[in-house]
Length: 172
Image (tube, helix red, strand yellow):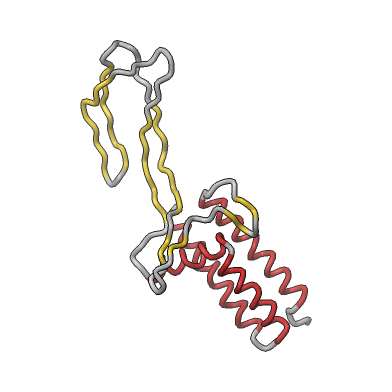
């Protein structure tokens, strides 16, 4: 998942660089792209994606975190008194957890698979922190799942490309 995320960040950034070159000889297109560039700095999702790419490419900081979790709940009829006899984790992943019920009731065990999440990124040059986005284009995001963030970014880039092709691309 982390590799796929990084594989998305680089071309998303390259899109802007290609677009910048495509508009350089047309004053109206340059003005349009100037507004796009300005939005990239002010929109939470767009700014995050830009600085996440910079962080992945130019620093040692990672923009994602993967965690393996064990969660215990206490539904009626299950033990609330237990001991953990042994617990093993390797590379941040739970490998084994042996527990004993102290009251004879069954043990509640809920295992969650790895959770892949985005983390805040810090721009090495300015020191600014770019938080995991909560909004995009003035709308609150339902969550910050990496797949949803990437899908929103891709949709936005497709919209920009369509607008460029309609208004500014050279006609054959």
